[in-house]
Image (cartoon, rainbow, N blue to C red):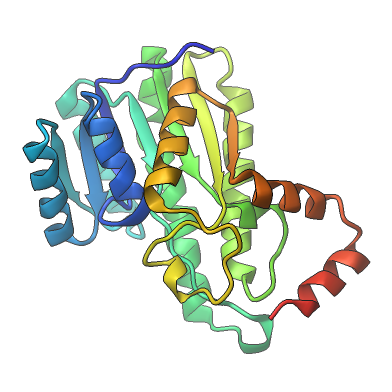
Length: 252
C-alpha cells in the first residue's frame, strides 16, 4: 500500500504522551499540525520545540469532553486551512473502574472523553472529507478493547466502542477516498499509564510513536503493538469465558 502524504493534521490529546509525540513526528515531516489539548502551557512548549526544529505546530486549546465545542472548533479549523487531511482521535482517559468499587464519576468521564469525545473528533468534518474524496481518520483505541479486563470496565468498554466504530466506518468509506485506521497500543510510558502497577512489555513513547506514525502513513486498517501483548490478547479474544475469567481473577 502506497504511503500517504498530508498537508494538514489535527491531533487530540497532544499535550503529552503519544499525542505529543505524534504531533512532533508529523510536523518534522512537513505537515502543519494542529495540536489540540486542554493544557495550553504544554501546547505552547510543544509549538516552541517544533519551531526550533523548523516545523509548524499550531496550539489548539480544546477539551474533547465538550462535544459541541469539539465539533465547532474542528469545523472552524477545517474551513480555515482548506481542509484537514488527517485527524487523529488520540485524547483518552483511563482510571481503575472495578465492579467492586464502581464510581459513576470515573465511568462518566471515561465515556465523555473516550467515547463521545473521540466520536465527535472523528465525525466533525467526515462529511466534508467524503465530499472532497480525500482524508484519513485515525482512532487510537487500545489492546484493552479486545476483552473486558480486570478493574477496567469503563476503559475496556470505551475502547471497544471506538474499535467497532472505526471498523464500521472503514467498511462504509471503502470507496470514498477516505482512509480509516484503528490503532491498538499496548502499555506505553505516559502520564496515564504511570498509575498502573503491572505493565508487561512496556514501550518507550518514542518507539511507540515511530510504529504508529509509519502505520498511519501506510494507511493500515488496523495496527496492534507490541507483538507480544497483541499475540496474548489475540489468544484471549478466543479464550472460553471460563478460562478467561479464571485468568483475570489471578491477576493482581
